[in-house]
Amino acid sequence: MAAPVPRPGILDIAPYVGGEARAPGVTRLIRLASNEGALGPSPKAVAAYAEASGELHRYPDGGSTELREAIGALHGIDAERIVCGAGSDELLGLLVRGYAGPGDEVLYSRHGFLMYPIAAKSVGAVPVAAPEKDLRTDIDALLAAVTERTKIVFVANPNNPTGSYVTGEELARLHAGLPPHVVLVVDAAYAEYIDLPDYATGKELVDAHANVVMTRTFSKIYALGSVRLGWAYCPPGIADVLNRLRGPFNVSAAAQITALAALADHDFVERSRRHNDVWRAWLAEQLTGLGLKVHPSVGNFLLVSFAGAGGHNDPAEAARQYLKNRGILVRQMGAYGLPDCLRITIGTEEEMRTVAGTVGSFLRGE
Ligand code: PMP
Image (tube, rainbow, N blue to C red; front, side, top):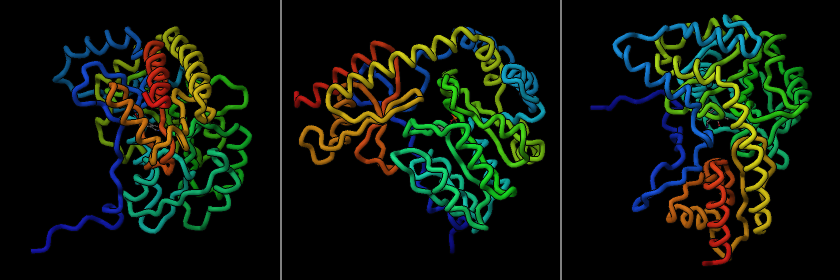
């Protein structure tokens, strides 16, 4: 008997492999493989999560109403145009489901976040990767890759794993060059870490146009990856589409309650941003001092090239194993087309001192 066959494209998906969370035989782990906020969540968010346990039998508010209103108030945007999802991953997938189908093209940047090609393939669309210059999204290359089949363009700003960003001017130029039926998705998962005058999340473009969406997450600076919560700021027509596609209770009550408390703790977010600034700069300086190439990053992680290091065949993999054997987990980058690199999340001061010291030992062949 013939077995069921999935739709075209689905078996082409290389399943997303998250950052490692275990190292056999090691009792104390330093987890720097998934860009989770260094300081963990706000204590106020943790307390709210504990309180949520009293109502486990109740369905959540399917519209995430209070949370959307709080996000809207904080960012000065219309709550009606915000859609919450189980992580921004869910929203990226729903956008593809809503706007692309078999044979359509979904455009992204060569070293862009891996969920873009995965989401494209899940609906039978063709992921198209535009080349980058110096590990930076290249607006001209993206525009040159647009065809009449292009339905969605994804730009992570800043991008994971490269850590680079495009300016507000560049984003506007990209949007201006796109046909109006193409959806431009600006994935600003790491936006809260950035305080630079030329950086833009895409919010102003969403305000002004019918074909731009900005996505955000609570998994990074708010450090709430476990509850799965992201949100999209959309033109009314696209919010309507996402609301039709999403599950009726796609965001758990725990996520809504915890995020509300996290949003209100401005001091904690500010402290997390400052911590990231200090320790990202420190780690970059240490690793550069060890002779490694550290790519400039505005996120809570560094992309580090190990090419030519230590006389190994595959120095990045050798370094990753060396670190893992000592309880330090960092991310391999082969799936992103950067096999010489490792991505290291900014953690606590102690974690940063330990990882810098251990990379030094590795390079010295100790
Ligand atoms: N976009 C980017 C650029 C990311 O790095 C991540 C997390 N790795 C996500 C989206 C998804 O985050 P989440 O689903 O946890 O909101």
